Amino acid sequence: MLAWLLFAMPMWCHSAEFILEDLDGKTHHLEDYRGKWVLVNFWATWCPPCLDEIPELASLHRAHKDKDLVVIGIAMDSGSRFKVADFVEAHNINYPVIMGNREIAAQIGFVDALPVSYIYSPTGKQVERHAGEVTRKSVETYIAARKSTQ
Image 1 (tube, rainbow, N blue to C red):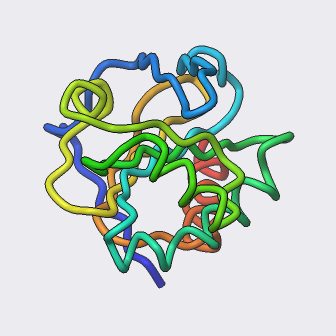
Image 2: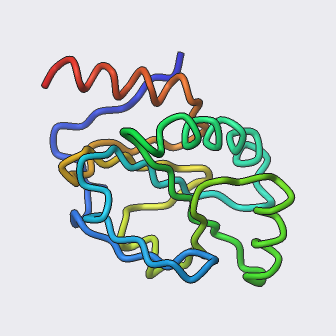
């Protein structure tokens, strides 16, 4: 089972807003997802653990996107936007993907390894950071535990 690290005063917690433009040109604001959990995942096409978690994230997004959770991927590739778009299509990634850079990362949090995921609560508060792979089950378990304590 995946252990989530919780900190009383997290130094990685950033502002409660982001503005991201995906590969299709659609803009995503955190406020657009009020009422839903948001998982923002930093990854790269060359990162083996990132590739392992893509099917898990796609399954998570597919199961929850119309109800209570969305996944947003941020590709930290230095290559072209077209290379990443081709990769997204080839790997059937069904959640929005953004081309990442330092400015994009600064809106979300500290990216010292890949993959790294941030979770925002339905109120828009950043509540979690996890370095390493996540699974659909680990995220669902985390959210269920948070819901039961509210």
